[in-house]
Length: 166
Image (cartoon, rainbow, N blue to C red; front, side, top):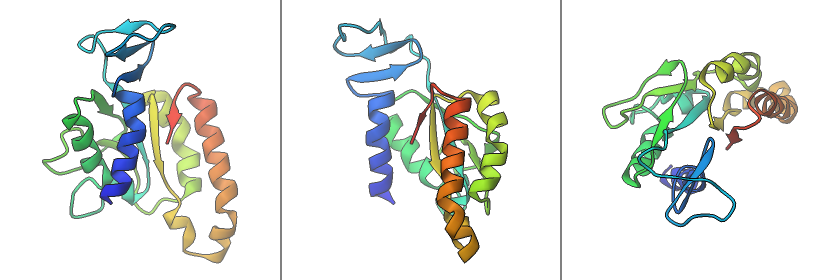
């Protein structure tokens, strides 16, 4: 679990932190990039991150927040300004920002059928997508999972074209 969270944090580090933090409308940097506006870190709004998926995202675990708890702690320890967004709210005391779009037991198709409204409401800059586990329980579901995942990714990127999808 920790290595997966660390990989996400490293990817997010390039999007919300490090020497180059991408933000809507500019770049926060310790060194100015020649072709990008530079904002001070104090003026930078938190990056809106939508954790999206099934129970792994919702946090149906003893850590009370799933991967979101470790990810939040890693980002916060590194001084990253993030705002988890979504209609769900769950997590333990180690997770100060409990918002997410994790739905226990849901399949790729169920997320696909609902994602437009969530994206329009919360306008994430980053979508962390972890879905597909529940599609693996029947041979029929398994065979169609890649096509459903493609359709979901297409829906996310067409609805929120500026968002990064991880």
